[in-house]
Length: 266
Image 1 (cartoon, rainbow, N blue to C red):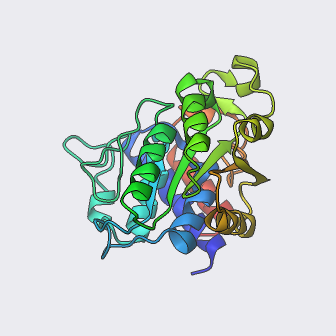
Image 2: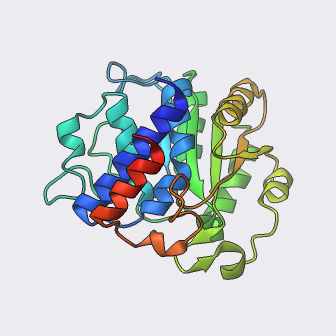
């Protein structure tokens, strides 16, 4: 399956899940799904057969409120089943509205923002100590870069030369209560991470080819952790959701699901 078709299919699955379960954070999932689709299709060395081995790549969705984007990718890789996916956000389900490592394919609980990068640092350092060759990938939100723990982890990663760590900032310019630069003045994230000693790339976070190439640069990096600033659009892919922060919490109606399906050409 071509990557754009895969992304569209995953987008529509996320929209249906939000509609059927009345679960929020739809737009946040749509802004990062191109990154996640590219990782799970072409980059991550993980599948249903090696989901518990020591040499699998690790993926941490630090912006845990976008859990739906992770779950549809896990189902695509057959790490979880279609039946499990349909249980999303239901009482007693392992597919909670924020990821839990009780579910196969989930490395860490990431309900509280700002901790995924620190967890990724620990995993990456551990792999070096144990001489295990795998990459650790972390997808963060721009809003969570308000957290001091992010910058502590950034300093640590550079100090320990964690070249086996690759992080993304899903830079959709919004957070729950407003524009990211208005809530706190983040300034240039690229310059900040460069000053903290990271190898920094800035890309269009919806261009699958650029996402793939940036990951390949990270894999070849010899001494530094890599930060990919992915410029994205909240609600990407659906015209009436794009860059509209109401969709951080809004639930699509049946009519809106049909409109989204038409736009995605499903």
